[in-house]
Amino acid sequence: MSPADGAAGITLTPTLQSSDFSDPDAGDAHGVSQWQITAVAGDYSVAVFDSQTDNVNLVSIVVPSGKLSFSTTYYWHVRHQDDHGEWSAWSAETSFTTMSAPNQAPAQPVNISPANGAAGITLTPTLQSSDFSDPDAGDTHGASQWQITAVAGDYSVTVFDSQADDVNLLSIVVPTGKLSFSTTYYWHVRHQDSHGEWSAWSVETSFVTEAAPEAAPEEPEDESVPDVPSPPPAQPADQTAPAEPEMPAEPDDDTETAGSLPTASDSRGPLPFVLAVIAGVGAVAIVGTGLFLAYTMRLRALSKPRGLSSARTISKRLRK
Image (cartoon, rainbow, N blue to C red; front, side, top):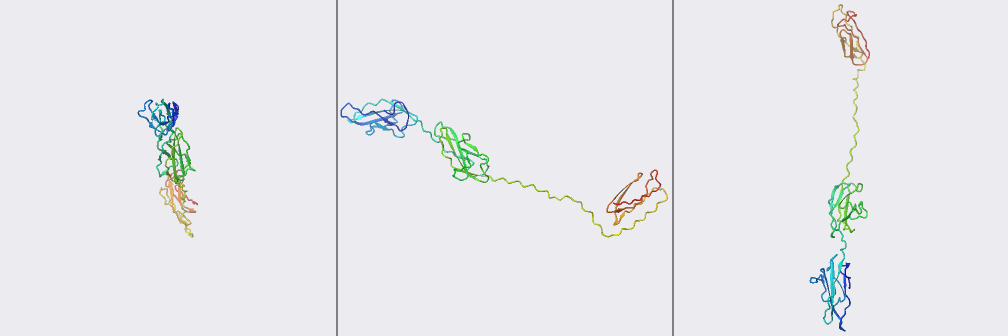
């Protein structure tokens, strides 16, 4: 008999096998067999498989696809009929357990961000995929793989490949130095479950990186011209110096009267000057302009300091 009683890991399309036909009546032959499988021990009122009378599959039969489920215990029996239509008793019931479901691939992820065709993306963008999904109950997200290329659909030479990454499962920041300014890139991602099964790659999407920033302008040089004093006005080339003026006569008495201010002149004509007298001290300050100034002056003191004569003539010739 097969499968053996209590066998496990049986496929979903097992072959059931019985002992050979045997009949006490000499000459009787094996006419048909009937095979039944149930999920409830001893109860075949609702069988998951019933071959009915089968004159082909007499001592073995392959259970058709779609009758059994993974990781389930089943019970079965069989009976034979001779060529006179007489049935044997049902065989003693035995059981078997089907195999666990083979691991199925996770669902294909979807590119979430950047949006397809997005522009102005930084050189270190964050790629993001949809959540992990797997048809197998209990399977978890084991790893992801992220790839970027500069040639649509061609990942034989990538600008970035994370390989199997068990940290950045649903998003990843592209490292510095991988992308360039003003370039179109294409990317996809796939998920791996906790049994090592990979999903299909996501549908490829693209993005365009930002333009390179403009360089700051150079600091202009200081081209201002420093202030230069203007030269003195040009003097006439040939002029004869006027005669030196006569000094007025000194008064006879000691009356404190103000004398007339003398006129200053040089070889090129009259020039202004300022004369300051501090009474009682006799200090004199003269300010003038021009070249080779010659001054002659006479000053009568407005007050008579101690030890001085009643009138004093001061004559100076200054040359600058």
